[in-house]
Length: 246
Image (tube, rainbow, N blue to C red):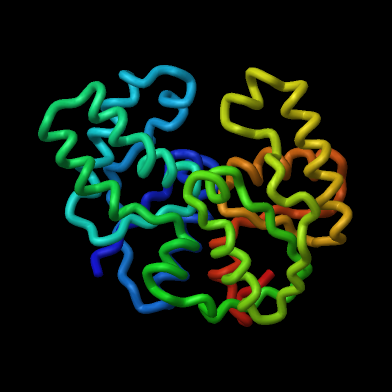
């Protein structure tokens, strides 16, 4: 199987360790992972804020860069959802026939990390070891668009040494929503306050999620309040082993 990592621009810029964790994890499972350096943004920010024609070059670039791969794996449910749900829309409305055909070939190969592990590789125990108390937040795109909410908990429950505790009202949004947090700061902050309260009620050392954008949002509040609760991407827990766990 020819596998590529779509790290996303957000992770590449702010959380490169997550991409490294994905590669370490998949290589441990016996797969060689390629990293096409020509990859750029998926166009989600443009599409979601109404600049849909401006997203066309990014849709075209994605289809070109990831052509020919059997699987394109990304540690971001929101970017996976953008590609799977909206690249065809952009190509159909603003592209030409060759682009529509290229997008139609590329889109079915895109998988969010937990989805790829459970549904494609048919594995839940990846040999991870993480001896900490962890609570998991299912991000909105994983929950409502990709519908893979059960995959991360299944993977986390198989991690050796982990104390996985349920997050109250886990399915509530954290309030980030990309540009939503910028355009509606008061509502976003209210939602964030609720999420932080629920996280703290678990007594967890780590808040885990499959999207670093949500972890950045919640983690900022946890840090400013000096709660001592750290955030960690799912990939980093799954990549941890007994010799290198935090």
